[in-house]
Image 1: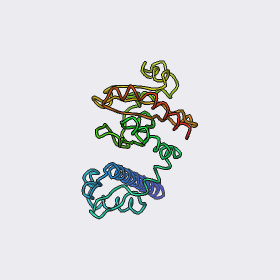
Image 2 (image 1 turned 90 degrees about the vertical axis):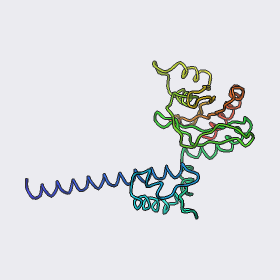
Image 3 (image 1 turned 60 degrees about the vertical axis):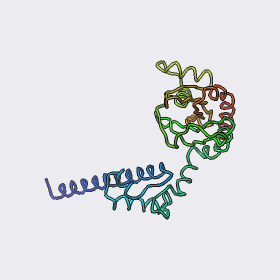
Image 4 (image 1 turned 45 degrees about the vertical axis):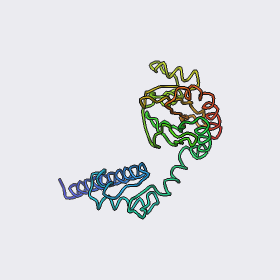
Length: 239
């Protein structure tokens, strides 16, 4: 091997290692942001370090970088919480459908006395992008924004699957949801929980979303179908 070839090999290896390190840093930063955003009470530097499996100094540097971009903020108790930059990111999601839908979700949650959410399909997963809990009742079921479960499972998963073209091997529940315009399940995601979901008919056919209600009461679930279909139509008109 010539000196030039050896030099080229060394440079290539160095560049490869640099890309690997950069990818690892990005992955850690994104995971740290997800961890902090998922904890309303915030996380201390040591908490983040333990969950990332890194030294406290590395976790601190990651959090400082995120704070510089307003994605996290360090509060007076020394803990890090989601920053204002996450709002900007959320507004960009689905061309603002989430923000426009929030007042409608709030109204529906209070009228029905149950948690109502906006769920989007990301690949083969159903992801909660907005969750509104009712103020009208003292006891209710809920879950956090970012919660995921497979498409095709639960009311929301079936509603999202119903937005896809019919497939020979699809579950009968998907075909039924497509025909009825909604899906209703019990205990598929959470034991004892009823789910009612209605797919949205967005202007962008590639954007698969639905509205989803969860409750522990069968009467609420059965009585919510018409109202859920109505709010789905309103939100669909926004996009």
